[in-house]
Amino acid sequence: MCGQQRVLALLYNFPQASLKDLGLVKYEVLPTEPLHDIGHHIENVFTKFAKHLKPAETQAVEDYYNTSIGNKDSKRTADYRTALVQTTALLQKSGVMSNKALAVLKSLVEIHRIPYSSDKRSQAFILRYYNQAWYHSILLREFIKKPNKLTLRKMFGVYFHNISAHGGIMLRIISGLAANVEKQERVFNAIKSITKRRSEERRVGKECRSRW
Image (tube, rainbow, N blue to C red; front, side, top):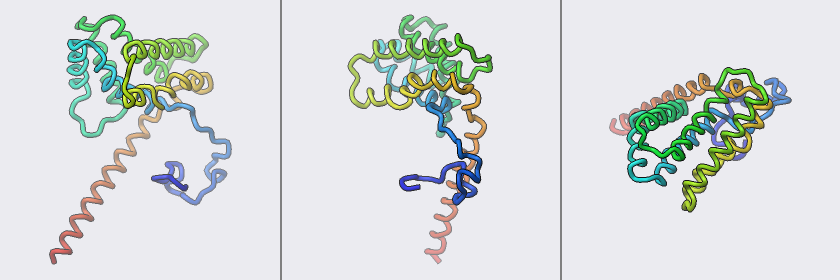
């Protein structure tokens, strides 16, 4: 556990258990996690990609995106995916964006759709993902030609790499639905709220004792 900031989820209740006890002797780590990789890449696209468009296009993207994502303090990956679909639909309907700029978002919509699709996997299904990831990558490179160091790391970092390099390989091995843990992710929100509330109660308790 050296270097770990928190206990692994599978060892939370039994931190001393072995992998054999948990039935994980042949446990494999997925090369990409659609839930987080796609969600955070969507976030990066809207915060970085929009800055490289024409002023009118940038303003339209920011307006529609902020309207879709809302003013939530804690944003889940589901919120980013919803904002992507809604913003892309509104931009296409408004006609304010060029076809190539809009294609960046539409290709990302398709990348996000395929791993969450209930369609039966096939060679054409997997090839569709590869093509869309390749197309999306080329379009991003065309718009972000001379990015600064931060933009380069954000846009083409681990999330983008997992989606473009490992996403198609994973789909050949396992269905995207099997790798999506949307319902399980909600547990973390409950744990975070409990931890935050308990920390606040302990802080208030210490202040009261110090006054007495």
